[in-house]
Image (cartoon, rainbow over all chains, first blue to last red; front, side, top):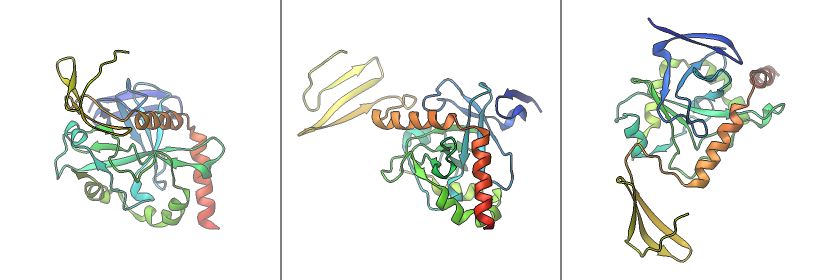
Length: 172
Length: 79
């Protein structure tokens, strides 16, 4: 299997299977030039993952699946986004949101629920979308919700991920 | 900036593939329709800017920031 690697700024050398790479054909907002990322799991017990660029060593985001703090998160995705991702009603997807942790103030961490990352789990293409719902903000405080749900989130396994995320994807 | 005056139901075309139509004018609000290929992203500018800014903030999170957060979560969990 073909391997690909990067000497990342935060985590040192990362070597992954080419198949693990997720392709954002449009990049992320503000980072349109970077297309290839991997999701790193550094701690199985933690709900947090790192979305690491395979092109820019210093570019990485903390991400989390919303099910860990908001099980009913159900963003509406535009037809254009669904089409760009090649999604139909039964395509398995993964949803992550990007987490911001102000330096030295972890209690003020927020998640961007307005611009989630949707991954087509079959093709491993992804897109940061703008949800069509007014109820989700770019700075949703998650510490309290996370602390309430941490024990049960830890018990959850990744096996449930696809089913959960599929129900999250409502195509208009 | 190119400035054009249009009436309701009139449009402008940008290149071969993009059409912007004025659908309705009501007081200070203008409803606009955009016809563009799927590959062209169309967003309200303030929302695009908000998400872009949040991505920039998130990109500066260090590994230590997350570690200190996890320590805190673990502490809360055991206390």
